Image 1 (spheres, rainbow, N blue to C red):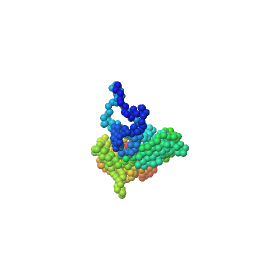
Image 2: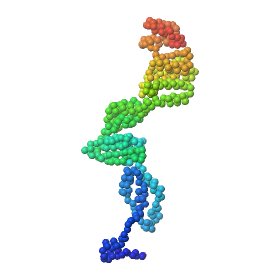
Image 3: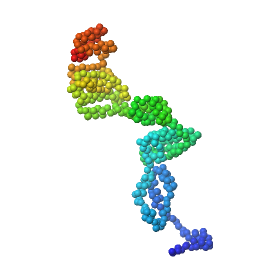
Image 4: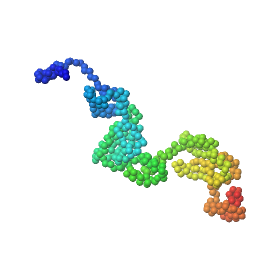
Length: 443
């Protein structure tokens, strides 16, 4: 093997002669500049810096902690193909890896509430979404937190335990990103030194409770407030007031059924859809224009073409009229016209929703019903209604049904004489009506 020739400075040091410092300085030439060739890794690092200072800080710290292995190309001699170092990947593949390195997670709102957990760098749609995530985290883990700052620009959440007693370092700081429409956690200390107490009652506002009881309210709309209090105490280990349960139930019903204003806005679409799917039907919708130019719902009338044609062809000439209160979320009165089919079963003809039951609304309803059924002024028609209770009371009621169930004319006259003895006006009122329309003896 050929021996390498050592420089003069090395021989002098080896023999121990001469001043080493002077010898070294004699070998250094004067220079103005030094040309340094950067490694490809640091060139790419300098070129991939972004405008967000937060991302640069995080990535610089990560790169400082990592070590770059030194590879001696001469050592590859004698290695197998599997052990030999692979060739450097293309620039496009390296760029893809760097892009993946800066991808932060996005919050998934579909995750179950007790599995939500804030993560450093995670992005949120809005501060409200992050606040809901922190509420779920606090209530499920039992660690109390409070929001030191919470607005449209930034959010700061700290531990709500006694600072002098526990000195809990938990903190979450988030703000809007400078280049994207996202809300991101910029700083977070996840460690808790406090004690779990599961008493985050202040975080359990009516809106949060309403979201937890949506399924229960769908299955059991008449859920009582005491039952809600018992469920909350068992499920969340917290006690809430009766008034908070009341407000939570109202908001849950609003989330399920929607707001009243949203329902009334769709009345016109509802009417057009009925006309499209049932050609020839009668749909009348009326509104009221207020002095401030706002529009409010007044009344609506519905009569399907198939129903009115079926009544004309195959039902008896008997119509029952009645009204009932709407006791749900939407108040008002429901006016109905009911018939009897050939099997003596109930046959709905038309119905209307009005603000209250009065003479103008009944007149409007009956005029539309008259035109739809082509009643010709009520000829050969029996109308049953409870609007003319002139002679009320149990005694008059029993006497009337006795007369109505009379099967022969003699019984009819005998029972009518009993009514005249009690009240002659009632006798005259019944005798003025057509007997064959209400007494079995004349059917």
